[in-house]
Length: 200
Image 1 (cartoon, one colour):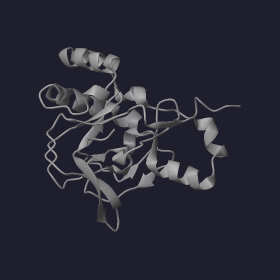
Image 2 (cartoon, rainbow, N blue to C red):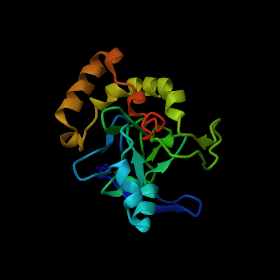
Image 3 (cartoon, rainbow, N blue to C red):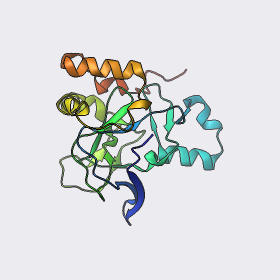
Image 4 (cartoon, rainbow, N blue to C red):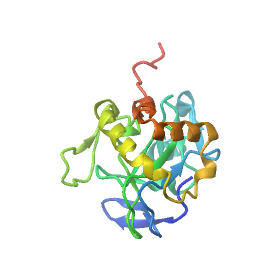
């Protein structure tokens, strides 16, 4: 479930639609939690789907560590990519705001940790990275892990409207990791390697 203080808006002709904050969302806020209404489509079932449904699924879903596609049931599927994201995923099935997000600003993710199938070029934001690659998480997870560790104490300091949706096991593990940062689970756990999972 996506944070409730958001709405879908048309951003521009190049981006299309995106998700923006309707109220101030402070750094450390949980902005998305994978919940029981999110659809998980097993990879082996995808080729048998209606082509229209399959195209929609490929456009709006992300690939989890098992290679299955996760389709958000709500507006979470409209979060756009950015190499300067406002939000970041964790290995605990929730995302957090890595900086303050002001009303009218987009909630964005770095698609590099979402196991994209093919490389794709994105809007130039003046960053060194210009393309999202399927193995980005292998190359950048150490930097991303440090970012999560830096922001994680803020998670305990700000209101969390979505806290009741975080599974107790995940939340308790995260709390322990905040107190002992060397226990923080790495984003590398979220990586899906299709070569390992190829069936012969």
